[in-house]
Image (cartoon, rainbow, N blue to C red; front, side, top):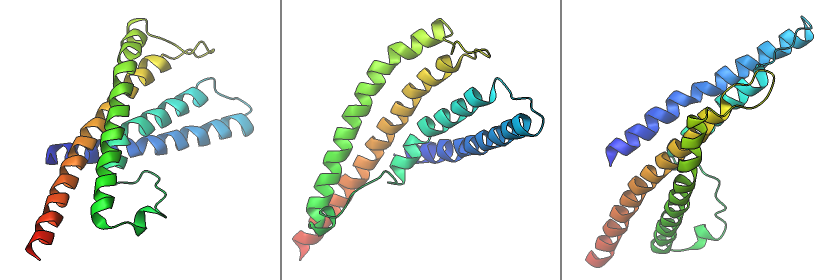
Length: 167
């Protein structure tokens, strides 16, 4: 499962630069609009594209680093064994949700590519033809990382169980 961790790390670190690109585009747009009085027709949609791709494709990385928002007020009070079981349940549930998203987004992604779906704006980029398939890739990355995370939790659960049995 180490290859999944490496893939998530590589993709997550690579797409982190998309946010810098989006910020640079935004700064350029502000300068063009307010300094030169020449706003662009493309900056807003291109910024949306880079942020959407960054958000979707960093999903495996965020899952690997366990950086999703959690409210742990009650969780922290529970014994370690129960915490591990709850984590396993959350991963299985998350996998199921992402598998359903993957299944439902697949057809929409294929259709968006097939018709080269565009935004309909004055610039009219094929934004949806890029973002809809990216949803499929993002869901796949989370599914893969959930498999790896479940394996790690299962190993930890077994180690804790073995340690308890030796005592």
